[in-house]
Length: 476
Image 1 (tube, rainbow, N blue to C red):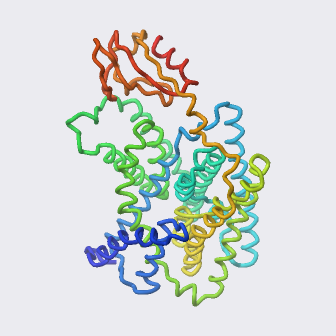
Image 2 (image 1 turned 45 degrees about the vertical axis):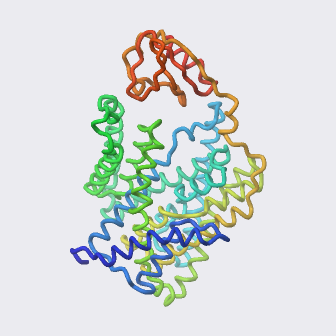
Image 3 (image 1 turned 90 degrees about the vertical axis):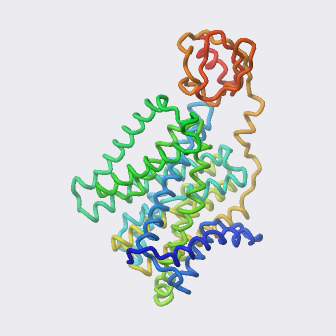
C-alpha cells in the first residue's frame, strides 16, 4: 500500500460520491437507498470491473474514519424522546419487554439456522454467524420509516427499539467473539468493559461541567465547537478501543450514545452539522470502497459462493419473521409481515461484521463477497416488499396525538433557587420551552444563557400533561 496520496483515486472517489445520489434519485420507479447506489458504483469502478481506484494509506484512513463516523451517527440515532413513547409506565415496560423477547427469539432462530448451515458445510463459526444474522440496521430503518411517516407511531417505535437492541447487543457480542478468537479466552476478552466505564465517566464529567463553558458566546461563533467536541470524544473512545484490542466501531458507537444523552435540546442542530461531514464526504467513501474492494470474480468462479446468497437472504428473513409473530397479536397480520420484511433489510453492521469475519479468517474472500452482495440485495428487496405489503391503516402518529394537548403559560417564578441561573442550567420538564421573558415591561427573546431574575414574567409552553411539573419547578 502506497504511503503517498493517490490524488487520481481520491478524485475519482469524490466525483462518484457526488454523482451517485443524482443517479439514484433519477430512478423514479424504485426507491433505492443511497448507500446501495454507492456500493454498486464502487463495484463498477473497483476490482470487479474497471479497476479505476487503487487504495493507498490515505484512502484507507478516510474509509476507516467513515466507518467509525457511521457508527457514531448510529449511536446518535438513539433518541431518548422516542424511547419514552408510552405514557403509562406499565405500557412502556411491556413494549420494551416485547422488543427484548423479539431479540431473544431472533438470536435463538439465528443460532439454530447457523447450526444447520454448519452441518451443511456452508459456514465455519456458528456463534459468530448467529450474531451476524441477528444484526439489524437502524441506519436503514430510521430514514425509511421517517419518509413514510411511520416512525412517529407506536408501531414504528417498537421497530426502532427492536433494531437498536439488535444492533447494540450484536455489536458487543461480535466484539467479544472477535477478541476471543484473536487472543484466546483471557482477561483481554473483557477489556471492552473498560470502554464502558470510561464512556460513563466521560458522560458524567461532561454532564456536570457543560454549564461552565459558554460555547454559544460570540467568542466561539463560527468555530463549530459542538462538531469539534464530537470528533474529540469519538477519537478518544476509538483510540482507547484500539489500545485495549477492542473493535474501534464499539468506541465510536458509544461516543454517539453519550452525545444522545447529553445533547437533548441541541441534538438536532448539532446532528445536522455532523451529518454534513459524515453523509457528505466520509461515509460515502466508506461505502464506495466496500464496493471497490469487492471481487465479484471470486463469486463467479465459485458457484457454491453464488448459491449462498439466496440461502443467506432466506435465513435473514426467517430470523426476523419468527419474532414478528409477537407483533401479530398486537398489530395484526399485515403489520407483523411488514415488520419481518423491513427488519430483514441489512446495512452497516452486517458489512462491518463481514469484514471482521474475513479478517479473522472465519470466511474466505468469496464468502465475504457473497455476504456483501446479500447486504446490497436485502437493502433493495425487503424495503420494496414492505412498500408492497404494508397498509398504514390503524396506526396513529404519536406527534398527532399530542397536537391538542399543548399548554402555554404566563407565570412569575417564585422559586428563589432559580434566580440568577441561566435557562440552560435549569432542568425544565421534557419539551417545555421559555419563549419570552418580560422584564420591566420589556419583552426579551431568551437564549440558553439568559438568566432568570426576580420579578421576571415568563411565557412558557409545552405538553399539557407536564404543566403541573413546570408549576412545581417555578413555584418551588
